[in-house]
Image (cartoon, rainbow over all chains, first blue to last red; front, side, top):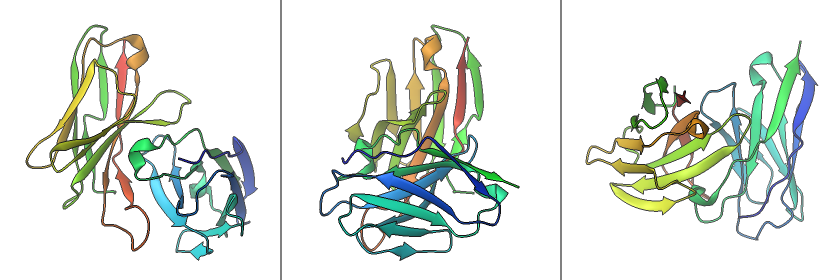
Length: 110
Length: 116
């Protein structure tokens, strides 16, 4: 699996866009980038995934650089309920080889 | 609600004891994954079952074992418990394949194990 690097923490003002970066410079051509989040001590929740094109769903947008070595998760209008730990992972062949790491702790500030 | 049910939510026990954590996957999901999350640590993969068969193993201790039953629920057995086994244990099941890439993981709310 490609190793990912995320900042340990970020703050974002409520109502503003939260941009969470992730580096995955060793990603292979057929590996997807996945984002999950964990609110407090709840079970993680899937957010979005992508290969090389930008993706958008009802929760977030995912921007992947052309060289695929990094990506950014965008929460367009952060709310207090978006305060969570966000994990960027690049599994290869299955989740069983993945350690979610410590992710980015996003604090949305009123 | 993810549809994955874990019981119990909290478990307090003593060193040397044995406990069983239970997981019911989402209806129709054949894969069950177990993860351990220690304080301030990331989620560590323990083991995966698919339709009753062990599919993959992570850094699971020999004192730990798991199984998946014909009704697809799974149990994680932890024995000879040590203080360091105190952690959140999550179960996840995987849903249908997303057109491309891996299927989504749906996590339960976890079992908080405290070994005193």
